[in-house]
Length: 211
Ligand code: TMP
Image 1 (cartoon, helix red, strand yellow):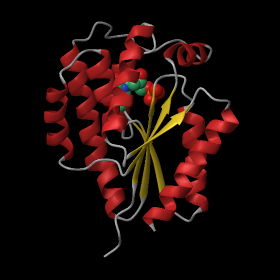
Image 2 (cartoon, protein in one colour):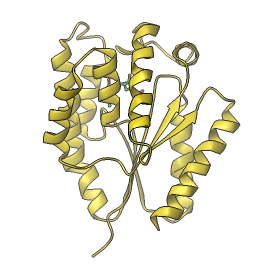
Image 3 (cartoon, protein in one colour):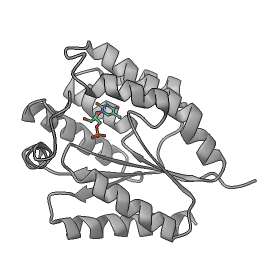
């Protein structure tokens, strides 16, 4: 039987440089001969992308926190069953821009949902599946928001205050400390070449350990 592919996720607050690092990680993995699927959350499937629009757009400003949480997991269930799990089973590697750590950080830390409630949904939707590697691009929220603000009109999350992102960051760092084998924390406040060097090192180290 073909070995299942590896599941790698990227996390971080807005403006941490996720897109650049995703592109770099994808190139390194493909160069190493891995068959790779790139995806994102919320999103990754037609229904997931439709839910993303509802979640990030401003048509439903003031959406109840439980609605937001359940829509994140609805998009995730679709993504897992229609894409991530079939791909991993076929031996393909999946590189995903955000996953459940984002729910703990944003809905848990940011919005104040109890961790135990998120854990129930995580177990229901994912069973025991977790990413094999998570790169956390860490930087102070003021720096990230300043960078993100220069790009485009803020979405429903980007318009939150710095204190919201401080709580998000705290939860991400706590999770990284709790699961040091899965997480690699990248100092994303450093100049871009340095951040890319750190990402490349982590990816190469993971490739060597997996094969
Ligand atoms: P981004 O991936 O383009 O940064 O935007 C996705 C936004 O959705 C980001 O602000 C984080 C947020 N989000 C959550 O609040 N919970 C989640 O579970 C996920 C996957 C994303």
